[in-house]
Image: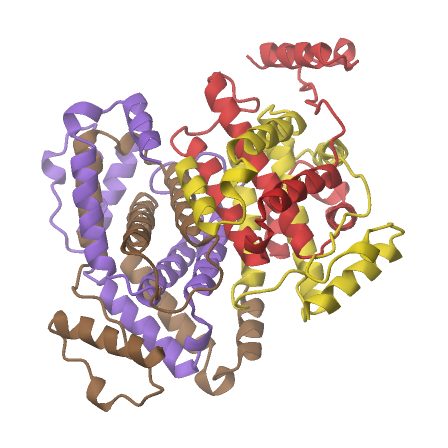
Length: 159
Length: 159
Length: 159
Length: 159
């Protein structure tokens, strides 16, 4: 089943005109799923800002209001997954409607998250890059490679 | 205080070499806060993918595991805001430490959100653009402009 | 306004036949709001268990399914509060409809929380009493009294 | 494994001096897990109220502050489950430490939920009983029995 899944992903990647490296992929190596465009955080921020301004809704978009709106959207995403039991990578067997619904809720979360960063005056692109630097240093591959135990211990040390 | 806040934002924008339009801004018009770079969703996806691969952690990154990790990070973000009461745009008066903490938690949410989209095989950039189209149509400015009542009614109709 | 609020609470308490101690309350001391019955966690657990059994829905109620359902309900509760800005104790000025809605969502969270404990085989009443013991010891009044700073420091040490 | 699990639950019930009906249980009928005491919502509310009063922390316990604290605790609970994949009823194979941790986070959520109801002046016991009435009517067993499809459709109609 994984092999079939990989092939499907490859076909999707090809359909989007992406080169991929499926020719050399080992049978156990899952084909990377890639996004089709280079949409930036700043482009999303600008679009949402325009949307709110045109409706005079900026007045409601305080940090805590947006945070609760974000929590609301995470709840809606969870409701799609709540009675499904464990779900494999790629959501195999899910209806087109359910998949579209997941895309909408992920988008809502992303939009509120980006606007929340804006309203907190947090430069989200810089913050993400800095966080990656921290994570890459904090979890050296040679110490945590492949071990779920080490992984969760590291994570829990972190919290 | 708002005026000072605006000036600070303007100075931040200037420091980042952005032109801005502060010269013409009316006293009541809040200066737009902009992100400093054009980091894309795909660049973040790729970085996180590399991070997981190098540690052999992909095996733990199923959709529902990532969804719960996302919920965990939203919880950590909420904890920063939980005892603060209402907070103004720009987080005036917050310590550098608290602001950095907000940046880290927003980043964690963003990273897991993007990886969750990847693992669901949802093309997040396309999904966001489609969601904006829906929102722009669904809430026509002439019908919802500036009215909190109309706004919340529209939102609740939606849910 | 606080005084009026207190009086209203007192009247509510009286209407429920509760003695209260309003006669001796200082003007600054907020009247305690009390629940009207002694409904127990076990009674709620039993009712929900009966509900699921009669519908043969136990099969869907695994720990992680219930956890995601809980997250969904917390999201729905957040949506009621999301555009309201800061809200005073007692939800003054809220419509009957909004208040009833809050009651429903709080109930949904409580029901799923209790069923989640059941499905994890956690004896929730014992766990709560033990947690109170820990909290009472951990935050000695003489060290944390009335200080928001000490409070948040203590809380963050805890996480 | 289920049989063993059932026996363990029965033994736990016996240890708590509960009669149980294990003698007559069919092999497929899962033994009911019961809470060991009749701790009430009002008792928990009173304890938490005393806790806050003694520390003069009531001032921080506004509805939205408590709501965000609740979201924070739900996040901490999710973190325990996030990398575990699907988990069976009873958390078989979990360490004593992890189980105790689940008990603590469930308790924290319950405590904040009950205090949130208090601060919203929502009579939670009444609200829960009313919600059960609604649910029992809304999902008649003969229409929804055992069908995941009907179940989720009903649930989604509801939202």
